[in-house]
Length: 326
Image (tube, rainbow, N blue to C red; front, side, top):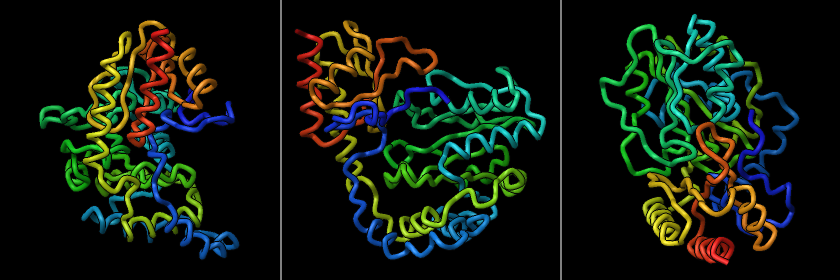
């Protein structure tokens, strides 16, 4: 795991506006909190060794068989489980297009895989940190004895079409990773899941640790799916605001925001390193951004931001413009 993921405000203690995490900071979690407060007796009981009840609910929600779903302790656990399972199945090589989330490569290396063709291809869709969607044509789907892993953690913050869970199940050698953590803005609870064919899920289940998902996380997952209270009530309006932020950044001299299909975006600053800009923004304005220089393929001048409220976005624009154009 690389050092320097987003949401590291604990290093500063003075963050008023957090643009560094891809989690929307203003989700209304009051209903979930009230529900979990009424379920605190669960901390005195073991959860299901494997959260079958939540898996059944997800399967019903996705219109797929429950035998095609595994719930995990966040999407990150899913990534490492998938890599472990594939290596045990004899997969020796991986292919990853950078820049993207570092855990795919870390997981493959942990289990002895090396870069190469003919094994497993990993795609983050929409991609972190660029925010761009990769269209997956029929000809790009994996051949027999190879796999395609698609991390769709940010699928609910995108209007472009993505592969459905049912399509992944039907393909046989496509593995999808999903994140309730991202969809419902509950990163502290760690709830993810994997969707694939029944055969692949059966193989994957052999590597799942008992009780890896705690009782409150399971209960939260069930409540969130049943009530479907999204982090952002109007995703279309939120994405329109993200596009406005992208345009306004590109209007500032020395900044270039890459095109994005979701709520976060990658930005390059010609005059400052991301580390210097991050430090100045947080210390002078209480604004936290994500230094993206530790993504493979990016240099010291790249940073990532996730759109927040219009007022906060405007304050970011004003602060960053002052800093780089003094």
